[in-house]
Amino acid sequence: MEFVHRSVLASEVMANLPLPTEGGLLIDCTLGEGGHSALFLERYPNLQVIGIDRDATILSKAVKRLEKYGSRFTPVNMWFDHYLASYEGERVDALLFDLGISTFHYAQSLRGFSFAVDEELDMRLNLEGDLTAKEIVNTYTEKEIADLIYKYGEERYSRRIASAICRSREEEEIVLATSLADIIARAVPPQYRYGRLHPATRTFQALRIAVNGEIERIVPALERAIQICRPGGHIGVISFHSLEDRPVKHFFRERAALGEVNLVTKKPIVPTEEESSENPPSRSAKFRVVERRGE
Image (cartoon, rainbow, N blue to C red; front, side, top):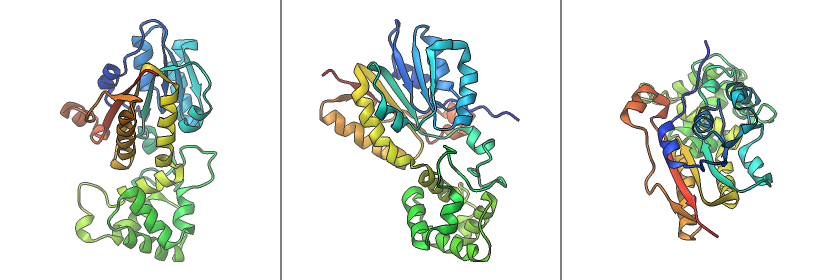
């Protein structure tokens, strides 16, 4: 079965990232399957889009989806912070960051992102990277694992979970996502096992973030985005949990106080009840936008 990632807050993104009717350049810093970029390319017939994704597999899906736009679309297989750091092109009219991961990664990537599927614990978004989730759970010290789960998962039972992981790996290497999920479920109090979230949710989030260095990339990328964005241009960020949203919020407020940007969204835009119902992964999304001030 082919899963298609539904772009979150699509109409809100289009409304808050205005582009020139003639020409224009958009950098889609987290291209994914190309949903947002397709909307922009369709609305603005003369727009150029640079689409960045660190995952070559999903990038190939986007390239196929957007091939009808020809030379107006340029794919780039890099981490967005690395690309922006090296960017030397013309000033950009808008930059979009969608910090969530695609439905593809949970449903089809075979990399252990989902705790409901028997897949090896990999969790790399860029398969050229060295660190995997399997390496973390099998080689890190108990304290390192506990600290990581608490820092990137905000998991209250991080120490209990880390202890259970280390006891389990003494008997057998932890290889599969489902095996790790079972270890976590047995480690937490019974009442925690039957809540709205699966007890492994926060730990899996923490491992994914640690493997890919997701949080550390945000602020350097936004700093560079301001530098290359033209006066009057816009920068938009969609985040999905507090660890992503917090640095974005603080960075935008700091730069607004310095007079570098105007806050287009004083409070984040969130999905409508209808979108949350029709597209459950969108429920936690927050969209913040700034406008680059003149120099």
